[in-house]
Image (cartoon, rainbow, N blue to C red; front, side, top):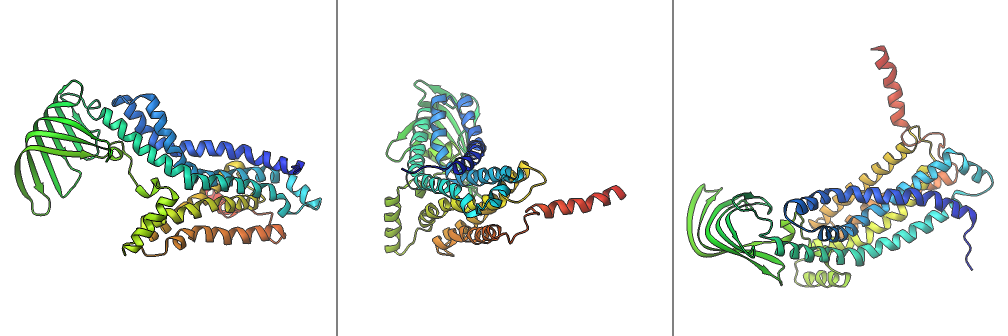
Length: 392
């Protein structure tokens, strides 16, 4: 029977507390941007609270894939930083316990988080994204006209301003319609219709405003010409994701096997789908960051911090921002076809792997300066500027 030793339980307890708190705070911070839009839907467009909660539940998995590595770095850095400040790690190493042994429980925890991140990337996130789009469709279908107000310029759909003179029961028949369509800046148009209907399309998951008996007045930005067109029937299609402020990205909704088949079909056709290939590569590269961040947190936690735990929190944010920036740069290179997707999205992992290996080895063999922390350069600069300010 496998028994967890006391030192392992103690280290895990010190790391798990800030990890859990960091996971909650970071996920909430990322969801907040979407939350404001969802609250607006509930207040101004009649979306029920239960539907809002379902949408939030479908959004969270895409953020957890990023916040898990960051929370693990934060938890390890704060946990080892607290033990280092109280000289507990110094006492342990003086007793003959190596840094390799001290890092074992953190590495085991990182492997568990790595498995969770893989489950999020390969299974939960594609399902949640597809379910999000499906739920958005039903919300928009049921409230495409319920959110509209009579004799008011409604701006609930991006790029469209809709004015309706009358709304007839059951809120799908419209009368006296004026629409300003600016979705294409090159061809802006104004549509006037005597009446209209809201027609859902279950298969395409779209909502069509079917306008009857009207005129289209349009302008061409390039030629500066205008045109006036009479119509008996005109369909204006609205995508639910765009209507709710979300962007539909098909590869993120596909299962692993579906993604592989789409990539293979595109390759056979001679037109590689770089967005799908980037999504597949990202499923492998991003979860691996959990292991690197865990070991990096152990190394940085040994360093002193004049600013205390707040300084260590800032360090973890800075490293994650650096990783995220490189990941987006690699994604841009991959989706543009300028670099192999797996190579492009492995760039941040390779850089962090080299940096983590060097720092961890130097710390484990006592070759690094344990008396100076990573942010000491900043504090040295502030100390130098201090006397100058006093002299001035």
